[in-house]
Structure formats: C-alpha cells, structure tokens
Length: 233
Image 1 (spheres, rainbow, N blue to C red):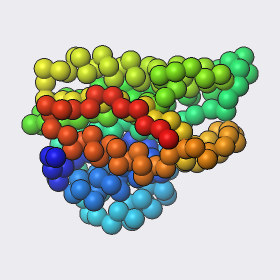
Image 2: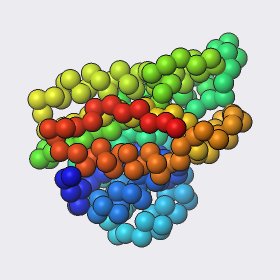
Image 3: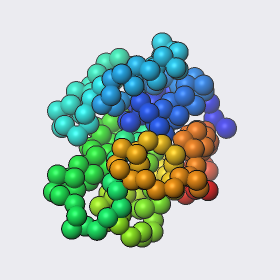
Image 4: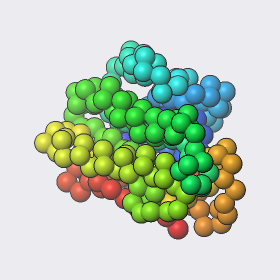
C-alpha cells in the first residue's frame, strides 16, 4: 500500500454523508483536505470533527460557473497543489415517471450530478497532472449500471458519470493520473429524506463502508489500480 500522507485531496460534497466519512478516513491517513460544499455550517462541523489545521473548507455552489473557477484558484493558493479529486457532490429525486418532473428539477439533477462534476474535473486536472501521481474518483451509482423504474433523470446523470469516467481513464492512461468510478448501491444518508423518498433503507450500506473502499482504492499502487468498483450489500 502506498502512503497518502501529505497528499492534498479536494472533496466535493464534503460536509455530510459519504463526503464527510471520506474526509474523516483520509484525514486519519494524513491527507490534507479541501472540503467543498454549499452548507458552511456543516462544513465547519466536519472540520471541527476532523480537528486538523490541514483541513480547509470552501462554501460554494459548484453549479455556478464562476464559483467553480474561483474555488479551484483559492485551493491552489492555499495548498499549492492538488493530488486527489473526489467528485462526490450529488442529489437524488423521488422515484416517479418522467412526466411528473418539472424542467427546473431535471436541470438541477443533471447539472449537480454530471455537468458540475465534468467542469470541476476540467479545472482541477491541469493541477493534478503537475504532481508525481494523481487520482480522480467519481462517485456514480448502480443507477448508472442497471435500470430501475422511476429513476430516469437520476440514472441519466449517473450513466453520464460512468461514461465520462471511462473515457477520461482512456484519455489519461499514458499520464500520471488514474481515474476511478464508484458505483454504489443504496447508502444510508439523508439524501433520500431530502428528496422526499421514503424507501426502506434496511439493505443500505453505511457511508463509512464506502469511505473505507475509497481509501483502499487510493492506497493501491499504479500497477494494480481499481478503475471501477461496485459496492452494495
């Protein structure tokens, strides 16, 4: 296993749920963290829980183009480098037929889950390429692997993340940057509650379980890198 100590990792959606657990696990490995999310209060709570001066928070709506660029510039100014990007920010919607969505919700899901992920990656990639080695991990979903009734918009965004990850991996295979896509099943976070989706979470994995998998992936040497992983109960 390679050491992650003193690497700089950017985590979008790093204030809660999966992102928070990834942050806690990476901080325990000595990783310096740049946590990006909208909710400044929760970002501060996560930073306090980590308890490290090597963690910095950035309150930002990454769906706003100018904000994305400003945040990446600020992270480089603060840390001087970026070694790891974990694209975790995402939203879901309650299961229902396509015709029951309005235009605003469709735009919100696709922009948050896919467009902003691509744009953040575009902005961060030149900085990762400057490092001896780098990693990009995109959080997709099993909704990007198989079909489930009522998930049309969410699935479209997650199939997009998976396709983007696969092509980016090919684009970067002769560089020092490795790309992974994580396709997880249900994770017991507050995302479903926020979306008004009251499904049974008995068979969901816990956020810390997924975070353990991601730390394992990042610790792999380049000659046995994990390009895609499916994680579910």
